[in-house]
Each structure stands twice: as C-alpha cells, then as structure tokens.
Amino acid sequence: MRSMHNWVTLALALTMSMSSCTCERALPPAPQPPPAAFSERGASISTPSPSPQLAKSTPTPKAEPVAEAPTPAAVSLPEDFPADVPIYAGAQLEQVHDLPNNAHNVIFRAQGSVEDINRFYHEKLTAAGWNVTQQFARPNHAFMTYKKGNLIANVTIAEDSRDPNQRVIAIMYEEEQPLPFEEF
Image (cartoon, rainbow, N blue to C red; front, side):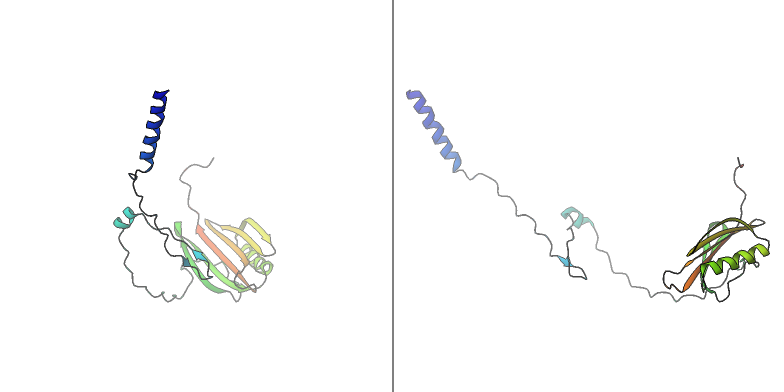
C-alpha cells in the first residue's frame, strides 16, 4: 500500500509541476482586416489583402495619362456597297463594321414600322433580281437573307432599344467564297 501511496504522490507532484510550466510559445497576433471601403450606395465592400510574399514581388502600377476620347469620324458607306441595295427613306447611317472575308455590316436608324421597312426591302430587292433564301418576321423584328450572283445580303430590322420610335436597319453583305472542300 505504501508503494501505491508513493506513486500517487509522485503523479500529483509531476502534474502540479507541469501545470505551472510556461514553456508554451506565444502566437503572433492575428492579422487585422483592412478598413472597409464603401460603394456609392454606402454599402461596405471588403477587399482581400495580398499575402506578404505577393506584396513584395508585385510592382506598383504607374498611373498612365488618360487619353481624351477620339472625335467620332464621319461615317460613310463602304465603296463596295451594292448599288442595287436601296437605303430606306430618311434612314441615317450610324455605323459601318468591317468583318472578316471582306464583309461589311452597315447600320442605319430610321422611323417607320418594322413591317413597312421589311416590305420596302423585300419589294425593292426582289425587283432588282435578288432571291430570298431565308426570312423571318415578327411585329418588332425581321430578318431576311438575299442572294444575287455570288453576293449575299442579310437585312435585319429591329426596334431601337434607345428610342422606341426608331428602327435599326443592319445590312450585312459579303461575296460568297468557294468552300475549301467538296460539298456532300
């Protein structure tokens, strides 16, 4: 019984000596989040802070001088715009986009209903010898594809999202290129 008493005493002494030990390491303080930024509406926006390694290796961007917006150049029809594709009465030329394979997209704005503009193009183009290969029409949108010889013209008419009284007329045209493989 005496040996059991000695073991219990030894265990208690050892436990008491370990509990007062201050050999634990102190942890560094937790990183503080950056101050919150505020959006235009006053809501808080938090941005993550970069890691110390990333912050050391990332150069600070230099402020570039801001160039003034270029003055819009006068828009004109491309020189190869098909002569027998009419321009709707009162239509204003807005943009011309050069596309791959020497294609062009010419955009006009005009007043009139989608139905009236669609009828105008259908009558004028078929009278000029263009064949309809595809067409789709709804009250607020129309799309037609015409072909004459090796020229293809797509005419799209839609309501102008910026002005409900205007219509956008897009005429995309290109010369059909032979396929690089045999048709099957």
